[in-house]
Image 1 (spheres, rainbow, N blue to C red):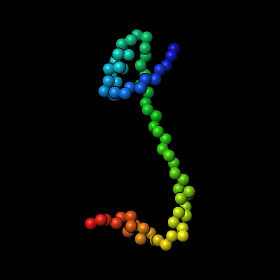
Image 2: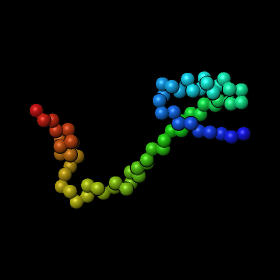
Image 3: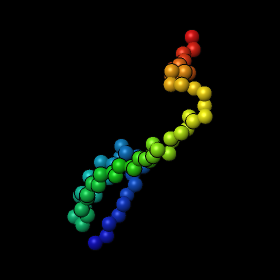
Image 4: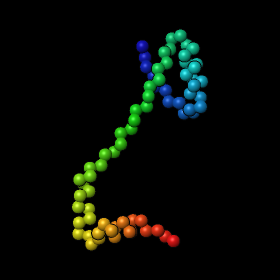
Length: 70
């Protein structure tokens, strides 16, 4: 028994292909769910001290971050 992986470029034709393959008596069709991609993790502790030595407080930082242009 052999297993193949098919990449369908046009998703609108996927069911046409699946139905065709199901009609063949020597082929079993098995749908496999896509694996969720791993998200990159961020180590929060690697950012520690990024504001050290800067003369800015939280209030001033928020004001600059949310500054609206009018």
